Length: 114
Image (cartoon, rainbow, N blue to C red; front, side, top):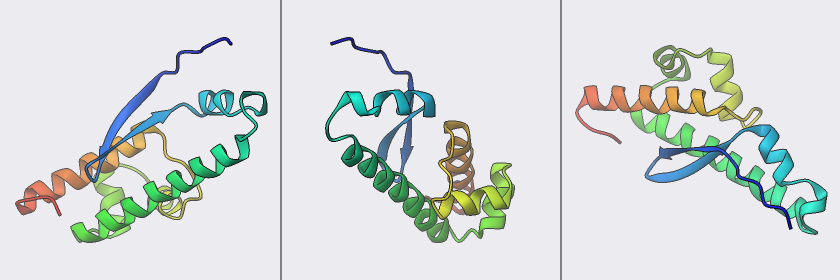
């Protein structure tokens, strides 16, 4: 069986490490020929994707930030943040990083993370 090296970025969110991979690599890894359980794997990924969105919403709210505040601090559009939080889009690593940094900076200004 041929193996493939996957490039990924690690991100820490709420004390948990996530691996972020490019969508084309994700699709290559989850092609039907890879496993009889491909649909289960895709469903598991979607659940994880929704968990990421849920944790982002929870952390934003615990920080006392509105979507508008966080989007402005992160330099992304409010509409983009709204779609991310509703699980309608999967953010790329760059967007996740901006959001995490913005929340961390805000919490540090207040004197501690939630």
